[in-house]
Image 1: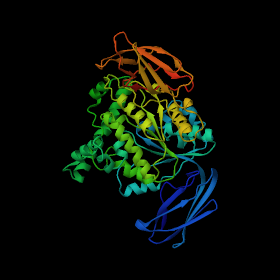
Image 2: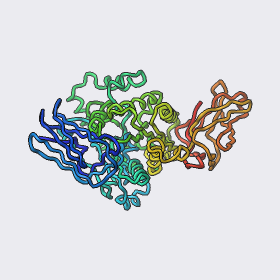
Image 3: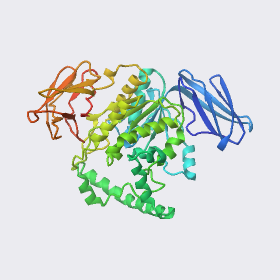
Image 4: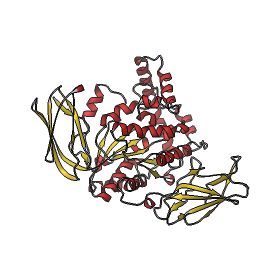
Length: 503
């Protein structure tokens, strides 16, 4: 008996210009031979009945076939319509999971999606490994672009792949590996979480939640929760159908208590280090170019830990792919606040952490998406600019096709304190700023840390901040808030908004 890992199928995309890993299972000591594009490699099945080979780097190509033979048992597997191009993994939570069919202008896009050289492999969203896990996984395969397929693809990943394919003139494959509501802690190992004071609380909370609970007790709680949600969710849907702009508190008064995310345990996708084993480890180390990542919303209860957590996600995935230089393109969270909520100033801490990671870890990118958020909607519909800005980051950092001025809207660089105010300098601005409204999100403070709205003078590539309330300015910040609708300073070159800052 010979099998390949489920991610290998007809129509798969293999990474160009890198050694290509192929692996699967066979009986111990069986001889496996792989034929591909004129190359023949051979190996023997060893520990854990796993066989694996590496094919040499190859140039972009399409319409290829691969034959895998078990010489010992005389079995053969054939994969057709293979492309060699660019492969990226799309990770994160619900805003990366958000399907193309639900995004802005989806119907127009779906009419033309089959004209682009993009393909997708959807990693099954399984939280628990049982017999059904393997059955579900065995049914997966790489999908070609058409209306039926693409409507369920990640909208962000689709727009990223579409633009990248056009710009590079190669087939682009997306490994869609994400799950709504998941913390960054769900995507790395228990050992990594425990290795830092900032992140071990995720494990401690989980261990406390399951302490003394049998598997049978947990399954009973889970069943009761699922029955509750089956009755509760239609009521919530009914409320918002009648009250599109209704407050969450009113929705709960109508439908009852929200018990999300349900009991914590071994079948919960929200548990720490869970989907790391049931999703990430199922596709690593499939050869790829890098990662795009949209996540952070579910960690807003621990914003001060996010800098460490995001670093560990990057390090974990690079380790699992056996390459500590793999590119990692990050979506900086947009503006957001729920209706009727107060500003907890936690999303701005996460945005700051995302930018710090970008500045401190090599081969990372930062797609600034501030103006794309929506008040009262944690899932903004306009995903096309998000995917395209991720692509701009890749085109700059990975493919060196564009300069930084076309990939960014300006990041804080440094500042000088004068007797009148603070002069702020920015990276990646060479042609000045485009101001489209009143600049009301800049603030300055003295040594007492009390902030006042700043008066703003925009020069070509610098911004001067001052306030008559602050005689001796020390600190300044921009967009230090969860939500503002006044995003109105952009790079003239790229049209991307200036990123937040706090110093």
